Amino acid sequence: MNFLQQINTDPLGVTQSLHQRYGDVVFLKLGPYNWYSFFHPDQVKEILVTQARDCVKGDRYKQVLGSVDGNGLIVSEGEFWAKQRRIIQPAFNHNCLANYAEAMVAETKRTVASWEPGAMVDMAAEMTGLTLMVANRVFFNIDVKKEAQELASAVDVITKALYRDFGALVLLPDWLPIPSKIEKRRAIATIDAVIARALKEHRSSPNDSKDVLSMLISAADTEGDGSKMSDEQIRDEAMTLFNAGHDSTAAALAWTWWLLLKHPDTYEQLISDLDNCLEGRKIDLSLLPRIPLLAAVAKESLRLYPPAWSIPRQAAADIELGGYKVPGGSFLNIFPWVTQRDSRFFDRPEEFLPERFLPENERHHHPFAFFPFGAGGHACIGKEFALMEMQLVIATICQQYQLQLAPNQQDVKPNPLISLEPKGGVQVIVSARR
Ligand code: HEM
Image (cartoon, rainbow, N blue to C red; front, top):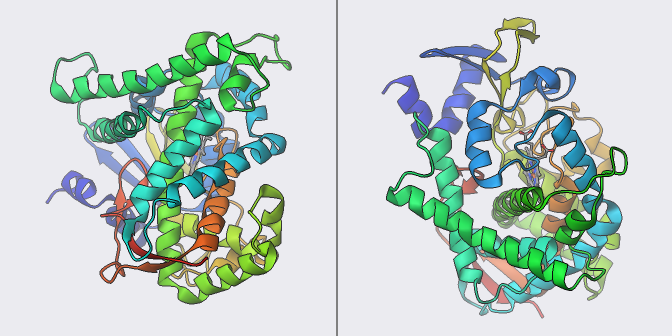
């Protein structure tokens, strides 16, 4: 099997072994392309922070994500991106998060209400459905009961299409009348229709709604020229947040359940901490700091199974990284999957040890060895949102149900799709607590 076949078959294993065999900087000449992999946190900092201006999102990345997200935050760069980020950032400040928290808990309760005690459920599928409903509530706040199924399959089609497009040797244009492209166009149209309906409903009955779309409509660039967004740009940003906002969080939650249930001592400790703190009350944002193990569990899960397992960039000019001269145009890759499992930066790196993320221990880590949300100016705008959602969902479910891994679930393997997903899902057996 040649190298390209190997990397296609087992990208996680191949990147790990490149690091083990060749060290912190690996250069590969793949046809006409210069392909660099950097595994040390110092280069994570260089690429995402100190030399970020010359380490840009690559053409393929922009073409593929742009085909769905238009010129949304995840695709845009430079001045335009900076302006959009300024406008959108307030929708993710602490006050807004407190508003979203309630919707997250309510949607979780709705999702688990259908669980039958004694039944087996796939936590990966459940978390995907749940984060999708949270995204709809928090971003658009419209009733999608009728089209919920259609929306879920549209999202699934888009995720698979993006994965295919990222790996394709030649990127075929989306207008081609072939089944996969027709399916992709239909899926985009389904989500576009939801966004268009939400925009129309918001415009026809403006209220003081606290959802993200209302903020995008009314937000102005007060630090810049005071301008508002066009409808087309609102669509692109809404589509971007919707897509970026649920798939990765669903994968992170699925892994967290698997890890927790594989480690009954931690699971029992967490349940006991939650019971002591909540005493039967509903969880909310203000209570999270009183249950530090909850955030520590979420972060340890993101360390071992980072949904964004690699972060790609392209050199916009000739630069120097880690002491090596890197020609302009080269592809640059950093890997949370590898660096976050490096024994130089984490003791017993393969083990699930949430204590390492308790507040008193967290500051001892290299600041760029743990970067599941990226770093620098383009770091995830939804970081606090996602961490909050993970904690609220876990707490709400722990209060109501006792979960147990199904017998054949001790060895779930990671599948590096757009997000790092548990292959075959995470099957658990649920029983009621109260
Ligand atoms: C566990 C869940 C999540 C993970 C692991 C994650 C991971 C990441 C990473 C690694 C990046 C940086 C990409 C790069 O530098 O190329 C990123 C960017 C981004 N994420 Fe997330 N994300 C998560 C949840 C969310 C949520 C909930 C939202 C929205 C509410 C979101 C919206 C975005 C956006 C818009 C960007 C682009 C930011 C920019 O370039 O300014 N993400 N995310």
